[in-house]
Image (cartoon, rainbow, N blue to C red; front, side):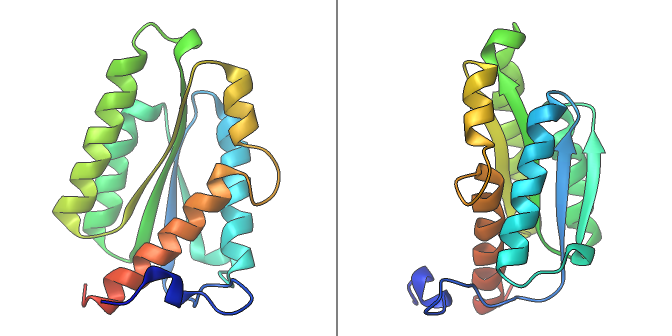
Length: 161
């Protein structure tokens, strides 16, 4: 089996797996999610994926992400799906329920469909912590999740999926 790092060129750019990618974004805490989307788009662009190959879908919150991600994955046509959201303990009394349900549901989407499904939901104690993780540049978690989606799309293709 090949080492995942072998997918990177000398300049750190991943090979383009082709096809389309989906971002499924929660509107709750949208100021943070908008920044994560921007990070994803920068991550895709840095690796040669044009913006017109990335579809963005919106859900009311993180709890609804698995439903929409599952429908997109089962429909085909996307190399990977990234679920984006921000669940902040200080802003909801049901933090564990929402974050845990979203995580379990998104794991199920990936395992049941075989389509790489990236858990791009920030789970933080405070709004400030979430903003720190949605900063500008390559440290933005959205940027990193786009790179993960590309890596997983390449690996699934390599494995014959």
